[in-house]
Image (cartoon, rainbow, N blue to C red; front, side, top):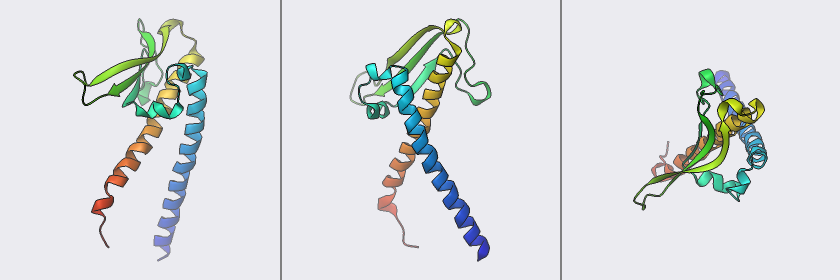
Length: 142
């Protein structure tokens, strides 16, 4: 019985930790949204999440070489919109063009990479919430 209570406590701690991390993430993401002038392209912060994804060209987003530049490329922040009724279903929208990646200030590049990772972190929570709600009609009595 005690081990079940311990597992419940650990799970509760983990879930509350995720909620705190999510809240902190959103706060910093909003700061980066203004700092990187994305608010000039996307007026409302919440509208960022209408995009299917946000991606980056010119720097790596892989965990093993996060932020590593790709020589000869241009650093650009891209939002991907999706319209199922359009002839061309997905469209890339530039949220920021920063020039040749080799000449971009390292701190600026790191903030851009951070924004993408923070966006994806929040988007994953939204996806989880969406599927949780979709499972409601299938709830079983146990």
